Length: 41
Image 1: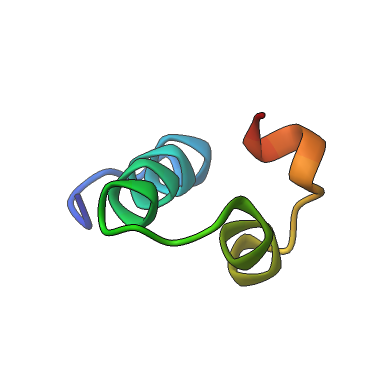
Image 2: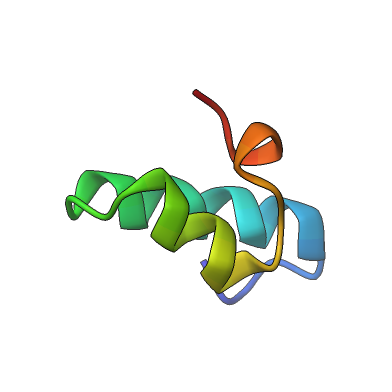
């Protein structure tokens, strides 16, 4: 995951990983400094 030079793709990987680990959309949006709507749901 950290091998990608595309920041946007890295954030997508991270969001998916955090969601699979059971994190809430609110937590993910705060971690990535994105709105909840941007994260999804």
